Length: 204
Image 1: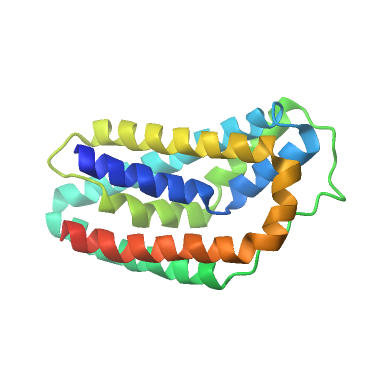
Image 2 (image 1 turned 60 degrees about the vertical axis):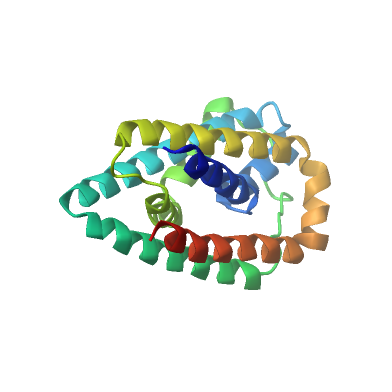
């Protein structure tokens, strides 16, 4: 993967990690319930789930691209439009609400790990999202395995740092989401629209 492409993916990964999603909200909830240290089990499970989803998407897309380079161009445009549509939905969505009033506080590390893993690995929207995003960064002339390693490592590091920060500051972040969550959604939604429309044009 070329350096400029990786830098774009790094910025995109940071934006994705900051956007409210199921695993980020789970880290927030578990951070408030169990503390930041114990929530590392939740985060670890989610990261492994994300790596599996990324592998499934990248190697599936890679096999399709090997049959015809035209498919990569088609996937870039379909994926870009899908990302823009997600951005519009996020822009219009209300702020997220976190209710921990009825949650069970006691949970073992293996339970938290399982919840994090299943939240990521069984989320069909996650599969659709990465299927739309990853074609924008695949270079058919380079090793797919090497690109997978770079993409997976970059995304998991940014997601890990973000979720650790969220879990550690859970008590302070929850009230902020209620006050400024709508504006935050609009900023993140705008980023998705920009990425969705700009990346296919850049690589066309």
